[in-house]
Image 1 (cartoon, rainbow, N blue to C red):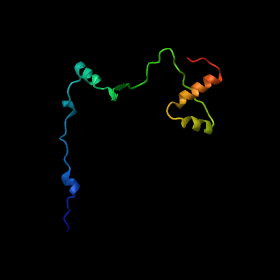
Image 2 (cartoon, rainbow, N blue to C red):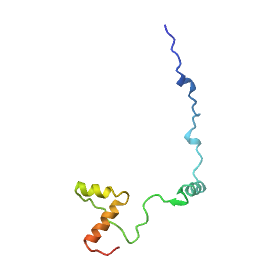
Image 3 (cartoon, rainbow, N blue to C red):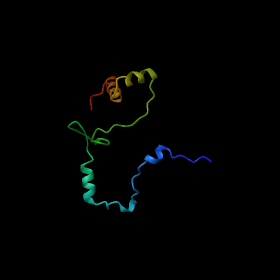
Image 4 (cartoon, helix red, strand yellow):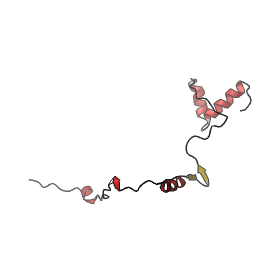
Length: 99
């Protein structure tokens, strides 16, 4: 009979030792404060905030609208902010003042 050869991949795998999840440190207010402080995302010198910005008085409604394919394609081709441009064009068409 032929002996089964060890593959080189099996012999070179170094696994981290298993750590019991019960050995995890206790979550304290101090630990959460430190994690919160270090959770900033920066791009250059600017802090990037995660999540939705505060709505304030200018809450916008969410709607579904069906547009012709060529209209939608032309707005999307404008790049980021194309939905805002649709809003601005609708304001001009309806002769509404800027909010």
